[in-house]
Figure (tube, rainbow, N blue to C red):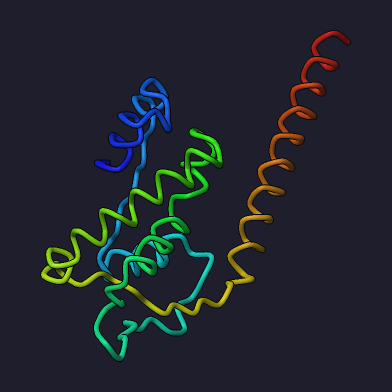
Length: 154
């Protein structure tokens, strides 16, 4: 958020827009992510592996880190602050990343996974059948009610 604040100070983005900017990011642990996928029921996990980079968790290159961050949140930033505001803010991110490389190098490694999912066709089928069954039951209730009304007035 430091770079966003600096962008306001430099007049690149509007303070009122920054005040409304929310960036809800949550990085679940591997077990929690697996549980979310399993609870959803639409997919079966075929592969769930940690991605281990040959030279550590990720390259400590300001350009790489800035582009990674931009890919993650750039769309949200551009939609609120405009494309130009987003580009200039990420230039500041790159500068600050360069300054903070020693601190970043000491940080806990991130979490990156290779996840291969297989879609469960039956889950969709059962959901569709349940929806259709609910519609049939609703129609039957309407028919029964109509019959009752007709019989009552005969």
